[in-house]
Length: 332
Image: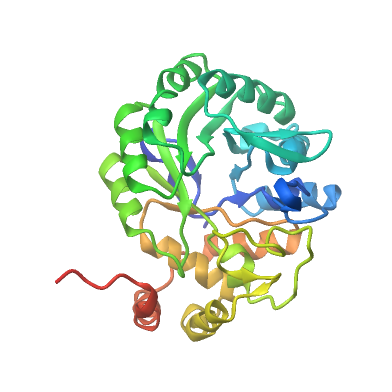
């Protein structure tokens, strides 16, 4: 039995675990040679991975206009040709990229670009509508985000999007957006067993929003892999926000915490990754983890969590006890 969840107030039903499509975009480069992708990919394997996800009960696919400078959307569109009715597509806007050079060229939060970017995404995805359209500028001031609401509502009216949201880690911003936007239905934010954003989950509860969990496996740290990554991988030259890896290897203090909770997460026969995803499903009925995958084996392992369901209460309590050093102190 596959678990499903509702995408906030949109009422759209999705699998409780989605598939993140950042890695299948391949390389993208920023200023100073900063990698914004996950290295080279095999497009045929990416397509097989998306098909395996569908076969395993995954219905939500999360991509963005700038992943691989549009390549992720193209591959997702190819994989979903003839299967569009089986998928809920979430994409994002606000980051410009040059497809020819695979370079990120900056952010653009303007309403005009939101419309232009959607047309480009629809063309790459080979579809006439996107189910969830997400603002992709984490730190954008809320006032600038609110300037987009009328445009986004217009896109809903036109049938080009079904709902919209914001990929941000700032609860106050999310709240302002949800208050203003009738069809705002989801907030995508960093959320994992290692990094709990309780304030954001509270906003999602208050405004009937889905909590799309990016980084649910801490960029691969919670898979237990010890393999060093290359310089063309975002983890190989980690930007400031990416604390899980240092110079392409797991950051020792975070790797130690993973080892501390490994037994609790795997206590009912799950893999480490399945335990981490199960913790997220137990955390709130609104959470929808979207772990990335670029191989059939990875997506099958992640999707198996749909049958395993939420982590048991005893294991969750043990994890919380063991991670008290990274949880906020209880209010006095």
